[in-house]
Image 1 (cartoon, rainbow, N blue to C red):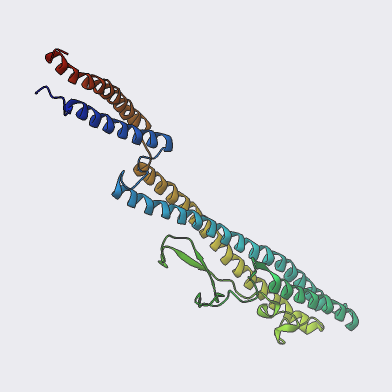
Image 2: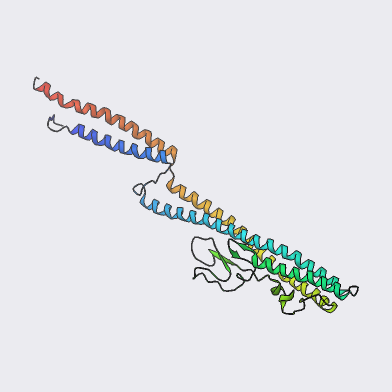
Length: 296
């Protein structure tokens, strides 16, 4: 190589190499300090696109877990109210049994019927007042087979959404709760004079025994359905948590930095930077050799 004084090519080369080493060092410092291998699109454009979609799905799955847990709380609220209704129905059957015997007078049987009707009214009150977050559960609002969410207020059976998309087989299902008023169970004055209408006469009390039995069976069927839904929701929560965990792990494989590997790269670039700095200093000295040839 010729000895030049207008252009210090060795210094330019050393400066370029030093700049590259410092740029690599900067990237290593950013990755090690953030813990991310992919912090910008320039690090891995394809990896970033895949990882961001995974990150979105993890967030959606975690929200799905919360949705399913909310639905479990809703089901438990309904089941708790039905447990209270159960006690009222048992008391009504007890009163029907009491009114069925001939050892009571008409006046006493009317007193028995008064409590019987009070129990029926309480069942209806519980059914009409039991709600979860403003959603009434036992008054028939959720008993329809048809769901519609197109209006501001959804109607019909309750839709529980927990998946990342909108596939009815994978991402949501329905919670349907039959009407649980006294009229729906066929007991009390509101039952339009079915067999469980009253216990004010001996014959009516005898008929009420079977009617209350039927009401208890209807109530148990609703509770069994709710129990099955709760079990299903609990399984859904577990499955969603496993999915979110595995998806987060897959995302980490793409985006998270391997500290040991990156630290090795950092040290390597640090050595290169130190060497380039030393050589740049030496390259800047080389043009002075021309002065010796000039005798200066």
